[in-house]
Amino acid sequence: PEVGLVDVPMKKWQDFARREFGSVACVREGLPAVTKYRALRQLWVPATGQMRFWGEGRWFTLVQLRILTGRTHQIRVHMAFIGHPLIGDAKYSPQLFEQDSAVVPRIFLHCLRMEFE
Image (cartoon, rainbow, N blue to C red; front, side, top):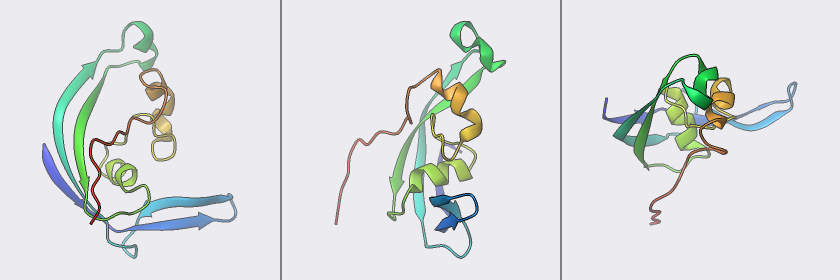
């Protein structure tokens, strides 16, 4: 949908066996986390030229987000949870990181406005 709400609790987890700390997951027993989103524009990038190694073209969407709670990695985790990970997000979308690196050199997340109460 063009407009939506992700209302999925989040929790930091630690995996001592794999030495991973500070990752965040969407889990039922986590803290409340709510994100509003609006799709602003879509862009089709064909798998030609430098992108030929993709094997097939990809759609990208410019999204406006508003977080109603302030959890660590909330935008990154919620977007990956609904199947639309951020471009260049090696942590929450490692399977697309190599393809994404051909488009942008780092995670594609930018802040237009920030407000505090």
